[in-house]
Length: 156
Image (cartoon, rainbow, N blue to C red; front, side, top):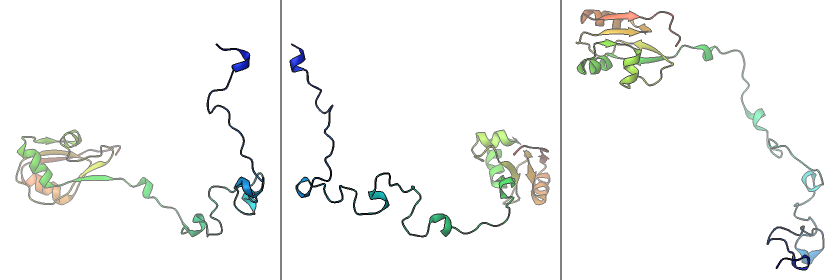
């Protein structure tokens, strides 16, 4: 039965504080677990996380960046070749646009613009809608009695 004379805290609920600086037998004497002397052994001693203890800091080891780079605004393209068009033509797809290329995993990133380049041989008749195409690619598609349509003002 619970009464005032036998109330106890749950096991582990109350901890005694670590007794520091109580000479040799305690195991925590001279330095009290704070290592040696210096900034961090004092009360309120603190060193920022980026401090590297005398080693040349990372921000000083890095090369200095000079000037402005326009690379962030560069337009990025997913390239497709005649081999990709032949694969789609073999699957009875003759009208090819960005949606078809994404569905068939020819291109992976829908944010990039699509560019057709003249690499390989094209024998099938295909109609292609792309953001950009090389002059040789346009000639080769038209030679195979196909058509290349350049999409203007695309966001990618």
